[in-house]
Structure formats: C-alpha cells, structure tokens
Image (cartoon, rainbow, N blue to C red):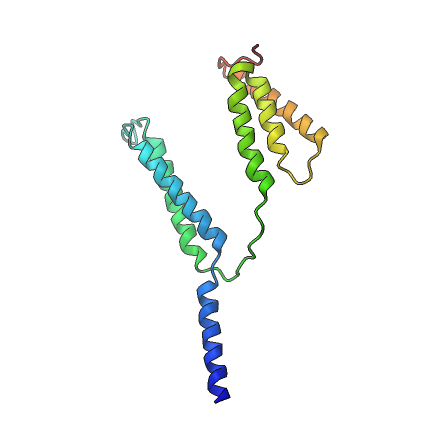
Length: 166
C-alpha cells in the first residue's frame, strides 16, 4: 500500500512542478508589451498610414505597435518553456516612484522655467531611484545631460526651446 502511495505522490509532485515551472516575470512583461502594442496600433489607426514609399503619420506607430505586440507574444509563449523558476523578488518601490516622478517634474517645469531646469530635474530625480545614490555624481550627471540636451536641441537642431525662462 505504501508503494502505491509514494508513486501517486511522486506523480502529483511532477504534475504540480510541470504546471508551475514558468517564468512569471516574463509572462507579465510579455502581457504588458502586448497590451501596449495593441494600444499603439489602435492609436496609430486614427491616422492615415500611407504606403512604404509614401509613409503617413500612422505608419510608424502601426509598425512599432505590431512589433511590440509580436515580441510580447513571443515572450509570453517562451515564458512557459523556462527551465528555471525565478524567485519572485520584492518590488523595488524607489524606482517605481522616482522614474515617473522625474517625468512629471520635467512636464511641470519645461514650460514655466525652460529646458535647462526641466532636464536637470528630470535627471536628478531619476537618479534618486538608485539604491546607492551619490549626490555629487547625480549633480554632475544632471549638469552634463542638461548641457548635452541644450547643445543637441537648441544649438545643433535649432529648435526653439529656451534654456531658461522666468
């Protein structure tokens, strides 16, 4: 009797192991990519797509949305064939909060204060998301990126983005 019981238990363990041996992070990432791809396709369909030789404003969003949805679907499928079962880790809240906050800072600062303060705040707040935040390095990076963005957009491309406005 105990032999049959051990065999049943082994088969049950194998079935549970086979069912749960997928990469949950890859599946979630794939589903998010598919959803974003579909949303991009839906938005891109509002514009004329044109043809390959005469691309319209909707062509590129349709192309990128299709590519994103396709790669997301591939990621979803391959997540079920994973040989390793990754350990689910705690969510790192600092990047989850600080990266969108940096984008919000840029959006709120660019019109009233200009490109310089907006880019500086974007980079500095984004760097606050690092576990080992170094204020001096963040300051140098923010100044460097602000200078780079000003040179590229204002000097080289001659776009009308003022560095400072009051």
